[in-house]
Length: 301
Ligand code: HSE
Image (cartoon, rainbow, N blue to C red; front, side, top):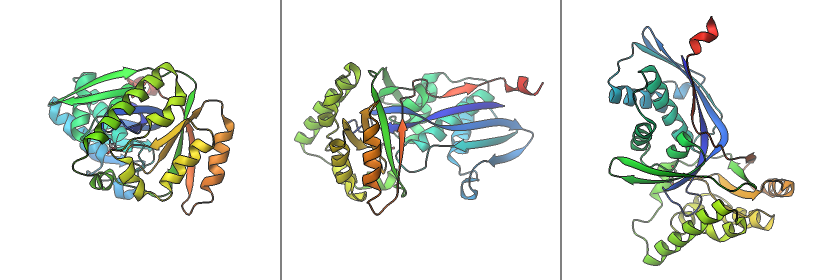
């Protein structure tokens, strides 16, 4: 048996569409075991307990890749990352499934190969890369390879996730995006994403307000989320450095000073006045990424 722990992730960070992602200290925990025969999955609601489960599908794709044929598979999941909220729950399931299968099959794949396979399954690298590697990760897809660079962010900030009670599928959130964009929108995002990375690395957090101003996806997706633009404005008014749509949404991520207790109180009070119900979670950057606890047989001796 093997245990795999995979962090939540927040992709795009505003302007870094399909390229940037950060891992956060909220986790999906998985246990994988090869059994004599069949397929057992526990810890999930009934509608997810089938062979269509993303964790199982990711395992099967991995077994296929490493040419390993397990007799039977048992999966247990304890998922803390909310689904379809823009916090990387699919990426966590994909990375969990691949790493579990890779371990059961004899640890054939390297970290880079795990990432390439995860990107192929997810379709873009910006959640799976930080879920696997931890921290802030910049990724590029070059043919079938995912090229990445992991960065350390300066200390002093926290990520405050504003999570609504409704879901938004990535598919739907991608469908509202335009097929082409004006040249000036490209230059806008190139400059913002450059500013964003330098501000995060050298701790010039007051620049985040400007850096988060993306025009490739947030203006379109924001319309799918009631009060999106107001919540971004309020976050800044209440003292956050800035706020952006986390991944494809609908979670909004505010970035505030680590020791700012007032921001969370104020934004919670404001969110209570809205029609939907919102949960506020203060999160920190996870720097480890996915971890595997091996050789658990010894636990039973
Ligand atoms: N980069 C992706 C998007 C993240 O914005 O659609 C969500 O999976």
